[in-house]
Image (cartoon, rainbow, N blue to C red):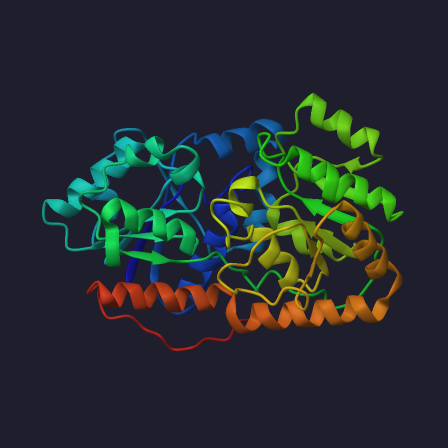
Length: 374
């Protein structure tokens, strides 16, 4: 099957978490023999920031880790029909410009033979609903939403059985436990500051708890304003700035554990949507402790795949227990990895996407299982 995906960026993961999952999903489709093309707007915000901060060499780790992936840049006003060509399935991510989203929909409505899906991986449908409702989706065959709570929003907007829950997942070809164990020290957290959506939670469940547990903490991420860096320094946190997502397995392998601190929208209005880092950390066999978060869709086994802390004091106790008990670390690592490999790999999500495409009447799809490389 010929598949075209319009993303904000495939090349850059700078403040662009969807790139993590997209790389794994497209790689899995290519491994099954599908013809996959990715398109991203030239000079997009994520890529511009990455290159501005780190130069072209900032892309080297991605290119080395994903040699089979590439993307085509297009200019504002480019003819979407020419880009789509003879694709059977087209997926458009919600970080794209509304004018482009509408133009692709018109190509479909005016006789395009492909099937067309809108892919939503953000909380704007509840935090800024007018921004999402401004998209002209009249020509779209359906919506892929990265959590059931988000799917329900679209159902209320009239999409009914034309919205599918399509969670993110781990690319286990790249995210897996290290082949050789080395020394592990302290905690790690990879994530962006969050635009004020979890400032208090980070201080309670991560910075203070790490200090109370007596564990050093390494933090990686972007968009940390001066006050955020001052907070990190006050708690003795080592801040390292941006790290290419492809380096995350190496970073995880140097640490004892990590912490999941969901943004408030995913802890309240949109429960059941974990950050991509949960999938990636568990896939790497890294023990994880979560701040309060309702696994509304039963994706994991709370208390088994990871520990849950109701408050900062319990978080500190869990972190101290993990640091002092190799058996607990090994059990958490094994259980979390077991659930990822059984339910939450990019190959699982490709199975789901191909089933959706078949439901929509897209070209015949190949569903043969392939070697994952792990």
